[in-house]
Length: 495
Image (cartoon, helix red, strand yellow):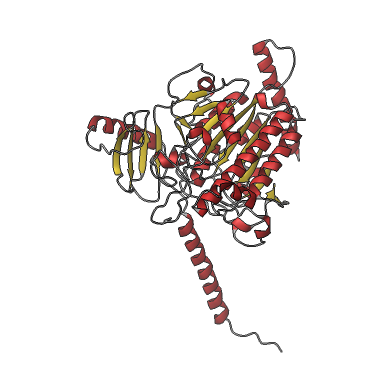
C-alpha cells in the first residue's frame, strides 16, 4: 500500500518538475504541460504499395494520404525484422531485439512464465509513464500471454485488444477456451464487449479514449496496434463491394480491410481535432513489416503489393523491411516534407522520450538504438540519422543483412538472392547481384555488421510450430507418467 501511495505522489511531483524546467528554460509564466501527445499507428502485414502516399494503388486510403501530405514521408523507413513479434519488440523497446534474444514470434500461452518480451526490457511506454504520460494500447499485443507479460504490467495504463498474434474480425466467431484468435477481446485484464467489425471497434475505443484524456492535464501516448490487414482475410461486405472490380477475391477482401483501417484512423484524427489536440500530437504511421508474399510455404498468399520492391514478409530484401512510414505534427512539421535518410522504427522510442523530457544517458538499462528524429522532421538537421541498419534472423545460421544509404549486403536463401551485394544508388530494387565485384565495400559492410553483432545475444525462444510441438510432448509425457504411476499402485481396500 505504501508503494502505491508513493507512486501516486511521485507522478504529479515529477510532472510539476518537468513542467517547471520547461518553463524556466522558456521564461513562461503558466505552469502548463505543453509536451506533445504521441500516437503510434502500426499496420500489420501492409504491402508497401497498398497506400496512396507510396505510389499507385487501387486501394482508397484518403486519411493516411492526408496525414502524409500534411506531414513528412520517410522514403527510407525500415523496421528491425521482417515479421510481427520481433518487429514489435524492437519498436516498443527502442532496441534491436537481438540485444535481448527475441527473434521469433511469441507463442500465445498464458501459463508459460518465460514466453514473452523479456522482463529485463523496459518499453518506452513505461518510460513515458514514469514521466507523467498516460499510456494506452489498442489491438494486437503479441509479446506474451502470461499475466506478468501483459500490457498493464509493461507500461500501459489502458489496454483494449487481444494478446495473441492475430484475431478474427467478427464478434460472432469468439469462443471461450479456444484458439487465441477466437478468444474474447480484453479491456485491461477483463473480458470486454466486442459487437462490431474488430478494426472499427478498436478505432472507436481509441477515439473514446482521446475524448476522456483530453479533459485531463497530462499528455497521452496511444499505441494503435491494428491487426489489419493481417489474415484471416475478413471485412464487412459493404467495404468488399467497393472493390468488385478486383478479380482476385483475396486481394478484394484485403483492399477492403485496408480501407476499413484507414476509416478507423480517421476516427482518431477526428477525435483529436474535436478535442483541439491535433496540432500538438505527433502521429507516426508505419507497418510492422512488408505484406505477405507467395513463397513455397505460402503459395496462395498473393494479396499484398510490395512493389517496386522484391519479396515481402519474412524477407530481408526491401520488400520485407522497407515499409510505408510517415509522421504528422502540425505544430512542428512543415507540410509536404519528404525525407530520404535512413529511418528506423527504433527511432520512434528515442524521439518520443526526447520530446517527453527523458534523460536516459545515465540509464544502463536503456541503451536505445534509435535516434531522435525531431531535428530531421523539422528541417534543423539534414543527412541520414543512421549510417547503417542491421538485421539478423535465427531460424537458421547465416541469415543477416546490413544496409547503408548506398548499398546492402545480405544472406538469405531466396530466389536469385542467396548471398548478395546490391548497389542501391543505381539499383534500389535489388535486381542485380554484384557479389564479389566490390570486395572493399563488401568488407566494409561486413565489418559494420560484425561490430553491431558484438553487443547481441543468440535467440532464446523457440519458433511457434516447434514450441507447440514441444508443449504437446510435455503434456503427453506428463500424462504417461501419471498413467504409469496410477497403474503401479495397488487398488485401495477398505474394511
